[in-house]
Image (cartoon, rainbow, N blue to C red; front, side):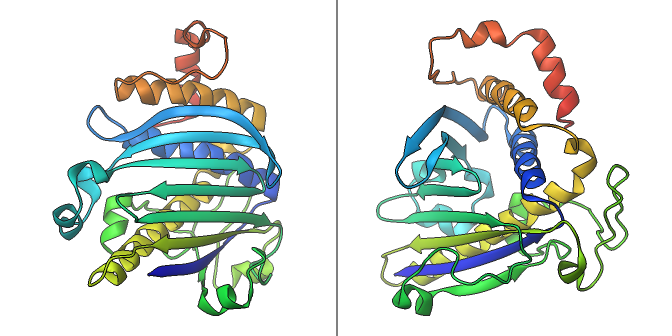
Length: 283
């Protein structure tokens, strides 16, 4: 079976601001969820270039998720299947993420970011058959998820109906805010799930879709809720923090980072760098 669903997530920020917000959010959420037993381990982080996406950044990560998986999935899946490897090709504003789970089960997420309010159609260039199979859901970041996955992923306490950014003056986000806010942009996330298992493939697809949705909601709520922490930072500053954050993550998981150039990474990761990261990314 194959499930295809497009999530459209409208955000009250510009494309360039979202690029900074997303990098900051990923780094902070990874820091919060990683310890010696579970969380994120960065295997590889390097530049790439191809004919489809052009130039961008390739990352390979391991996610250890045993305690966060529902009990019925831990019963069905092999133990090591809950250690998921994620490959990502980020050529912003286009991105692709692949997550093979176990056997023939896989999840692919293709994202296109546009400066609009979610009204563009077929931004992924699907054919007639794909369009017929595709479902579309508009995600409102003011509405947190309340299912099992919101517990597993995390659920911040932001009330955007009363929220106001001190640095930008943005907010609160009231009913119909997507039609009136400026700046505005949308993340169009096309999720394709392949679960070729007779009898429970449909249930598995729905569970994984619910998990992806919960992650999309929480991560994008954090992007806006943390705006006063990242606003004013540059992409270059975030790249430096991301590099330092990769080292901290692998220290927590007691695993080395796979270096992708000839520089001595350890010499760059000084005590002052650790302090800078801790100040820039509050945990």
